[in-house]
Image (tube, rainbow, N blue to C red; front, side, top):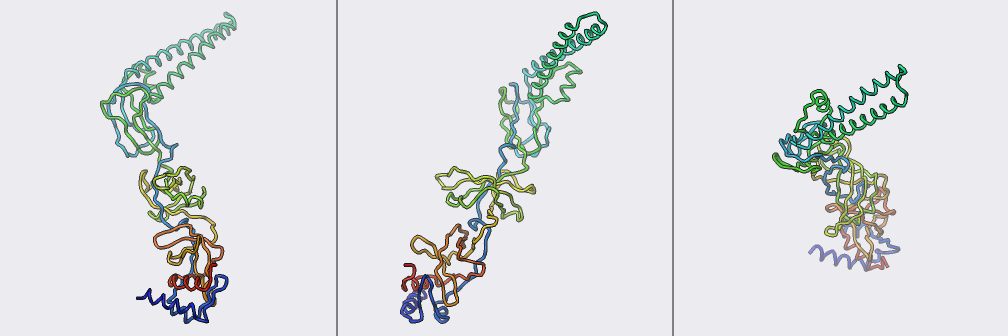
Length: 368
């Protein structure tokens, strides 16, 4: 009955001599406003794109993922960690038994012995040359052999390092000359074990991935956004998490690939350094702030009406309302964020009685 009454009232207003519409301006008396039950509200500035919450997932930056592999084939003797565990750089992860490692250590010891022999030959020839017993050319020959032996030893030492043999184990091998078939693979960085790709007792091939360890400072966010809203964004904008309050970050990049199933694309943002409470894979909600954006206004969605291809709101004037075109740039629940150069911080906008105002406006020739 209330809506029907509004229709009759609006019809009566159309023929009222005090109602005028000129240049989108709808003139109404205070009595007419009261009869229509029109309520207004002041627009509020917003710095949030879309004015709504966007879903996001905590991600590890791609350059912070590190693979743990074995240079040699072998059998997994033991696993010292579990997925998701925090580890320090150098912490033991996996023990591997490998015949290939024995062979590599023997080659290292051979190179070590060759370097020692070359060093002894060089020292002897240097003394003989200084005594005038041998020509300089012979000293130069032994010096070249020493340099080659040193290079070969360094190469073998690097191969042991790539196989996971630590410097202290190499030093022990130099002293004892006793190769070991077991090598312990260590965490390359401080972070978390994101994936274990093997089990104890499993046979693995040379170069096979055994684990993934990732540094978790900083962390990124992958934010999903409707493709049509991406034009409002650019790298450098600030983001804010809804929980925990106060945690934010910076927008890094805007994806160019749209998911055809959802018509959304990915935004990538870096969390601030105080994001210790965040975990990779965690789902969060964020808002993206558009720093310095002018004329972004937050209003109840009921204030906006459509005429033709354009959204409008009724802005209060001294003697009525003026139908003002606006551009809606986002939605959140029952509110919208819109853009219009005609609005200001003290603009009053109608939020009820919109149908009656629109009918009166159109009935008086408004919008033509």
